[in-house]
Figure 1 (cartoon, one colour):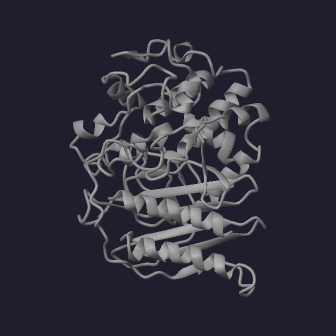
Figure 2 (cartoon, one colour; figure 1 turned 135 degrees about the vertical axis):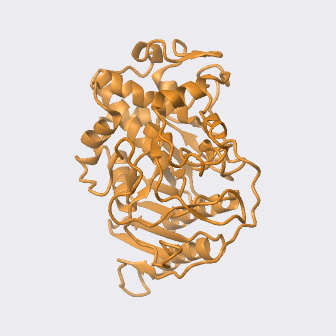
Length: 408
């Protein structure tokens, strides 16, 4: 999800797959797209210690998910929430499959889209800590001759610019219009990373490096290529060996080249061409459009565990974690919320309850994920199994995460 991208939701790549929170360059949104809700089995795995402790929290989170189904029209919604006491509770509403009407699952694997950027950034910052990458070195040093054309120049763009989304590089959203115009049209198309980069570089640079902030998935495709060049190994392997395996994230994986199905238990993922249009089942799709910017598959619990470990200093040395948390204003990162700031692959906002929270979020054909973690170890991850077709739908998913954090 990119956000100005916020301007309109759903038909281009920046608006969906790869976006952190929503999408860029999509058509104007119509906000009246509620669909038939499914059943909602409710809270699972929750403590039942009486009305004096957590029941009010559970009610607020459950009610937020119920509204996503009954009022916004998502097929299903699920949440995992870790309270300050360390207990993780899960909640569900709606259905995981519109055909069978099977209830939404609390622990199914989903495509986490632009949350992948946090993983890619972590690998690059680990390489910084190992002395293999310099944040203020030009991209040209690591990827000679690749970033060239139309005012885009890797000799002027630093690694920090890529991580912080201040490079001025265009997004590669023209890939969508060049291949049918709809995300559904390219759901089964495999893209090489260099194809994505070339599509972006065919457009003029948007601004001088470091002078502005603008979300572009191209930055993270280049970071994936950079990590591969430096290590001599695939970025997916680096993410797996450096993050997934050490944290014991058994339900998280980097899809293999050409892999279109989701392994293991998972809800179906749906997509519509516009407000009021029927949901199309795009559970099976090729995630190569996202690659190092948006390809990972995970459960809510695994994503929460990753964020907890990242902010807790388990993955990065203090100097690199401090760099990651050094933010700049990120206008339009999330629709309707001007408080966001962007660091190096990680974003921060101030919630209405006065708490600072970190996260990212992601959209892709079939799924939207929103997630936040606080300094005291609380986290919340909310998943809906359809790509929103209006900005209000996006805002309501984000609000449900804030509800989960603030009510805990």
